[in-house]
Length: 268
Length: 145
Length: 135
Image (cartoon, rainbow over the protein chains, first blue to last red):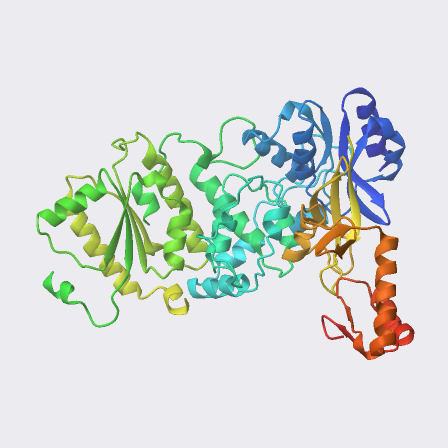
C-alpha cells in the first residue's frame, strides 16, 4: 500500500495531472481521482481486493480533459484493456501512465487468467498464468444436448439489467444494439434467449480482455465469462489474435485484412 | 428429385437464405429461369453484399424459428465491392463456433460462394442443405418460441 | 477537475442495494455498483443502474408549486406548508378528521413512513393511512 501511495505521489508531483485509483471512503474502496492539488487524499489510497472498471472512469475523465495525462491503477487485464482501447481509438495511450498491480495466486486461479500481471508492477508478486480454463473444458466435455440445456437454463435467468454491458470496460458504444427494439423485443423477460447473450458475445470479439467484471456484476449468476472466454479462444484459434497483447495491428473484425480461412474450415 | 419435391413425412423446414445481389441472387435467378427443380422451403433475402449481413441478422433468423440459414456470396476475389466477402467468412466462422459451444447445431448455418453463372450449383446447394435440415429436424427455438 | 464516487443506497425497492454515483465536476455522470456492499455484493437490477435518470431530469420539480387561479405558481416551502396546514385544519373542522387520507411511499424511508402515519393518526385523528405497497 505504502509503495503504491509513494509511487502515485511522485507521479502526481512530476508527470501526471490526475490518478484514477481506489480510495477508502466510509469503509468501502471507491473509485476516485487523486489530483496534485489534494495530495493529502493519498492517505486513503488502497489497492483493494475488489476490482472496479477503472478504465471506464479513465475514459470518462479523459474524455472531458483530453489534453491531460492521467495515471491509472492497472492489473494484468486492465493493461490489456488499455492496449485494446487505444487500438479502438478510444484513448491516447501515450497520455496514460499505468501503475501496475500483480494479482495474487488465488485471484489468478479464480479468473483462470493467462497473464495476471501487467508489464511493470509496484504491488504484488508475479504469479504464473493459467493456460487451460477448467470452465471451458467442463462445457466442452458436455454433449451437445447437455450444453444446450446448460446454456438455455442459464440464459433463462437473465433479468435484462444490462449489468454485464454497463460494467464492461470495453463497451464504449454510444448506441447499443442490445437496446435496438427491432432486434431485442422489449417488454419480455428473459430477453431473447439466446440472441441477447450471443449477440453480446459476438460484440466481444476482439474486445474482451477477460477481466470477469461482467460475471461479478450479474445478479443472476449467469456464467457469461465462460462464453466470452470461448470467444477469445475462437479468435485466437482462427486469427492468431490475442486481445490486448500487442499494440500493433488491428482487431480481426475491425479490418478487412487478407483471407486466411477456407470454406472447408467454416462448413465443418 | 421429384420424391424430394413431394416432401418426406415429417416437417417442412423453414430456411432463410441471405443472397448477395451480384452473385448468388443472380445464380438463383438463373436456376429459376432454367427451370431447375429444388425444394420450396427456402425464403430468400436479397442483400447487396454478404458483408452487410451482420451476425445480428443470422441470430434473429434463428431466434424467430428458422431451421436453417444459408449465406450465399461471391467467390473470394470476385466480390463486387472488392473485399466484402472477407468479412463474411470471418463473421460466419466465429458465429458457427459460438453456436456450437452453446449447444446449437452449427450445421444449421451454412456459407457458400455461388456465382451468378452457377445456377446448377445453386439448385444443388439448396437441395443438399434442405435435406440436411430435414435430417436435423426442427430447430428447438421453433418449438419453444 | 474533480471526480469522485458517492456511496448511496438505491431508493427504488426494499432491497436497498449499495451503489456509487459517479460525479465529475459536480455533474452526475454514471452509476457503479458497490462491490463491497453486504446486501447487493456488486449486483444491480435495471432500476438501480438507471437511478441517475431522475436526478438531473429536465422535468424534475425544483420548488413547491401552488395552484393560483388555475395556474401552478412557484412558492416557498414555508408558504406551501402553511397552505397545506391551513387547508387541512379547515377540512378537519368542517368535515371531520376522516375526510382526510394519507398515502405513504416505498421511495420514502421507514422513518418517514412512520412519521406520516403518526401525523395521520395522532395529529389529524384518522385511520385513513395506506402505502403504495399496502404496508
